[in-house]
Image (tube, rainbow, N blue to C red; front, side, top):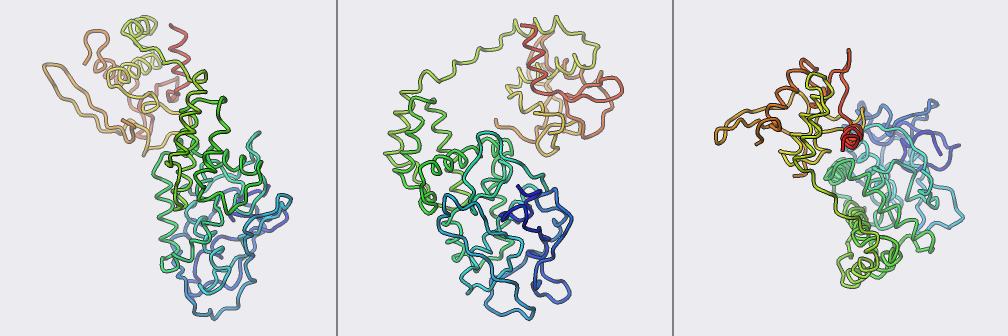
Length: 417
């Protein structure tokens, strides 16, 4: 697998990589598209490497006027349905944005729009290898990319065929629109949803479903796909399969037929046969649990006061734990996770102190020892003077700040009960 995928679709590890700006930006002096791509010997570790600035100059109109510069080699045409034994994929690096009248222009434009959309959504990222069980048949339509990139990077003959209807729209506008559609959900949701196109692709590969029939997926094809889950998973899981596949269709602006009656009936059948796979309801957290937790904490220890404030704020504020904690130590994002720089407002209601925290992102009064206001004040008093970008429930651990990780908090809580 290539060391990078600055080009969405790479032919093989022997194919040289090309600078992204040779495809996406105009020559600022002449105002013309570059005659040929600039080959680079240095391997790239990011999706678009150092070319994010070039995206700002992606103002390439589909025009039939010939360029004064020498033309680049003609782009390779994507096959309607690659052979099961054909492991080669056309490279995008050498593509030249051709005039709208050129028969291969739809393929070139589609690839460049997708590449720019990924750069808008994710910036740079490291290349990845397919995990065990995630292998698919090599295809020019599905380059090896991280899971969150699949919705933009993976396309079908339908995607390229529709590009001719958008020739009047600037490529940069198309890329930005696709990026914003993709950004309609969180990155965690994208990572989870990415299993949908993967599962559907693997299922189609196993049954040699032609590429042109995979999108838009026929209602009966969807019914066949979901029926493969009967007796193997729960009904909610089958619905998630469809939701993920639907999102892939939406990003590719393809009609979605998952709401047709034949598909709904199969989903209901899968739900009936999958009752044994349904998870039992989780038990509630009563006040007795909070009291037991309080007895095990030392309310002068930085970690304990952070955990106590977190537990009470989550309990009384009816928050999801993921709204107040981090998935990993390096996953903090100021636009998504609450930090010490957040707005804290205080008021009184019915004679009780109320503290409100502004959460940058969310999916949706206590008394005595279980008061979240007192717990929060104590946390801010003990764990004081952090940097502005310090996670809100981080605690002082010696000479450094330790963020509260969701799994660490759950392990600590589980050890008490």
